[in-house]
Length: 362
Image (cartoon, rainbow, N blue to C red; front, side, top):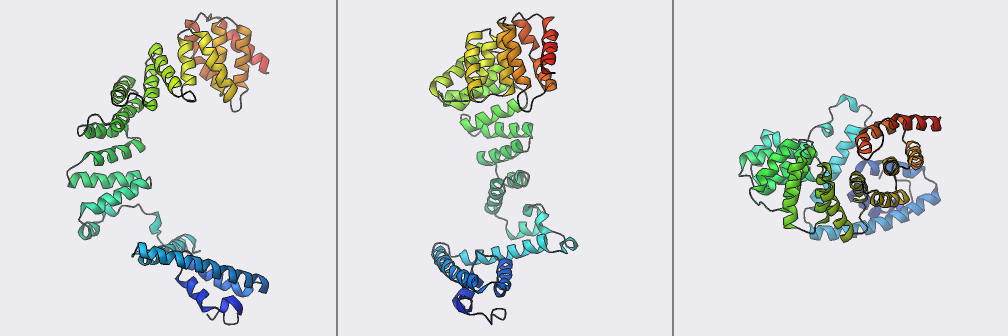
């Protein structure tokens, strides 16, 4: 009030000042800065802003009153939020903040504090804490909380799955797999759990076991498109191209707009020597949203069919594709040499093709 004692109009209105003081929407630091800036404003702007604030604060007051009817603890929550905001600004913005240890940089490990164990011994608190950390993607801390719960209570399926998912997100796939397998003992046919087990096997480079669990998931939900695509990918990785194609075509039939099966179909058809089929799907991809690999695959298709000039054309497009280079092209190309040789591309002709590409791109 001392700062505004010479003001007139809206900023001498006690309702406005009280509304600003009690509002939980504006933090205390912003209120402080705003009040000190008012005397410096031009009179016209000041009056307009005062009227605007009166209108906004009136609406906010109505919202806060209705919230308090629904949630009686709203006022306490607002006070605590303002206090935390003040602390945050102190430790993050104060010029001398380097002189203080920043509590906001600490790990959220309340579960490791002995006094918390004494004050809140109920497992319900730790479950809620774990859920909060989990929802905020704080998987390491959430895993520690769930681990504490599993050591001090009887584990259930949900708790094991939460632990497993945290491990998965942290890249600990073997540990995640072990926990998902334990969770499966509670319900052997839960599709979500079966697919997570399969995914962990995929990350662990074990496509045979991944396929086994995806097939189990398919038995429970036969028309799940995601499962079909995943089975196709496993079969492709195992070089069972004929069976993989069956799954990819089934997905395409059930979901014609699906963008996940075009490239695998091209590769399976190319590997099986079905060049017309491979070209059809490859051209469709090139017409929509191609990558450098798509141009390379189209080059492979034409070379395997004996059309060397067309292959050269598409290889050049791959090399000149944005973000690609001759070195990156050769690295990818070398991975496909066995496929080219399988379909009667002369091994002696491969270095000649690469030299031609270098010559044309100089």
